[in-house]
Length: 434
Image 1 (cartoon, one colour):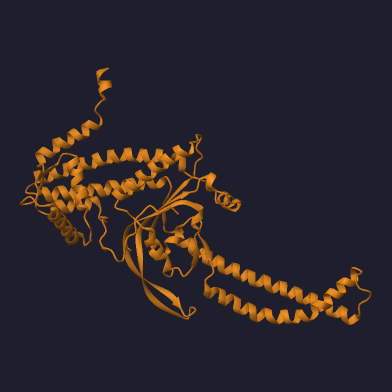
Image 2 (cartoon, rainbow, N blue to C red; image 1 turned 30 degrees about the horizontal axis):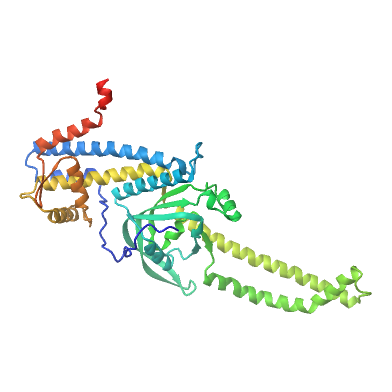
């Protein structure tokens, strides 16, 4: 698995606050207007119009980003077979463009990429599902996890061979996006691996993208497309103990009669001259023992398969009911999430700058917005003030006086945003000249 991220501390040890603003955009807008810093209805209406224009501008820009993502994903979509083929170099460039575009959108939607150390640490802890799983990573070219939001839940886990239950605090990620790049066909040398991909109808070189919700941190590896259930040590002991107790008497009885069976078989094939009646009885007893042994082995195998299917069912149900979207369908939801987060951050930054009694510094603005979000909605958010200011600056709304920050007043901001919107549809110079 290709490593593309630097190691970070696990989420539990890091700042508990997320950048994700888990409040509806309309609720934030209404709360800002009701905050009381806008003096009269004219100012409140002007602020609404500014927010409406900001939303329209970001929606238009992200629509272009959505089209770019769809184009970049065309050659890697496992659900379609592209008619045109690219050489290895062109395919590599297309993959890089896809990953860069998608990770940028995820970052705008306030997702954080997880390091491999964080994933491995989570997998080393006991699974919340109490299921042992294996996910061979050699099948993939690259695997990347992105998370957004987390909380803790109390679950009951079995102890002492299921005789006792105890409570355990489990870290739950609110949203998880998994990007899995399959190995190109030229890199697949195992015939077994090719058959496995064909059975799952996965095209070599394709990129699988999956979106999950409310996933325990300890069960991240259960999200891999090639995960399989294996029996835990406890289950192996529970199955092998009765097998030894029941199979040993059969083997001891069979050992005393198996030589007689070979003697009778040799007589029928002309390898021995004669056979006594007692030897025939012993041979029949040996055959009965072999049948009993075969039935015992089959019964133990069915018990093993039943236990495996039981765990596979639990694993499948856990993933199935938490899977939100897949592959190209994820782009629409992620674009919408990124657009939503960007609008809320711009609304907050503009409001608290235009209503400030004196021009604040960046750190002061950040602290003020975070405190208001905690008071108004009870959410602990690490507000990305730098990115919000950069967006206002790109639209020409931000003013700087050294470290002091301010924004254009309503009467100047509205014409500025109208010009930005009009520039989207301005004819190209060549077309205008014709």
